[in-house]
Every structure is written in structure tokens, then in C-alpha cells.
Length: 105
Image (cartoon, rainbow, N blue to C red):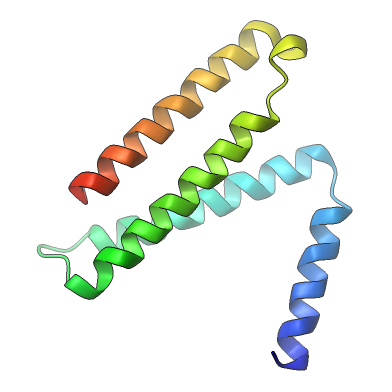
């Protein structure tokens, strides 16, 4: 690993470790959207090349990991009905991503 990539990795690690809870949630959303957009970009062709199938799968799995992390971050006791509704939305997103990954659509 080069010095530049080590510095970037150290910066990112520090950014995550020192971020507020709200900032961490925003980072997760940003990362999830990024992976979903990458997957859509690779699927948005008439015929998906074989070399892109694994890339699409990996991007969707990473987006699902982000959603799972968001689900785990919910405090259902403190959040009450709103947290339960958000959990339902996250579950729906995960189901839609699973379907998109299976159908590549």
C-alpha cells in the first residue's frame, strides 16, 4: 500500500471514529446510495455483460450491508412508532434489493 493510500485510509478511519451519530447515519446513507447507483449503472444496458454480473452482485450486497447496519442502529424502545416504521422501510429496501439482485433488474 502506498503512502497516499495509507494516508487516505487513516483519514477515513479518523473521520468515522470522530463522527457524531447523525454524521455516521448520513455516511451510511451516502455509501448505500453510491453502491445502488453503481449497480443501476451496470444494469442499465440492454444485455448485461458477464463480467459485470459479479460487480452488480457485490454492489447490491454492500448496499444491503449498509441497510442492515442502519437497521441495527435503530433504538426501537426510544424511537417508538417512528423507529418501527423506519425499520419497516429498511426491511422493504432490503427485499427490493434482493429481488433486483436475483433478477438483475
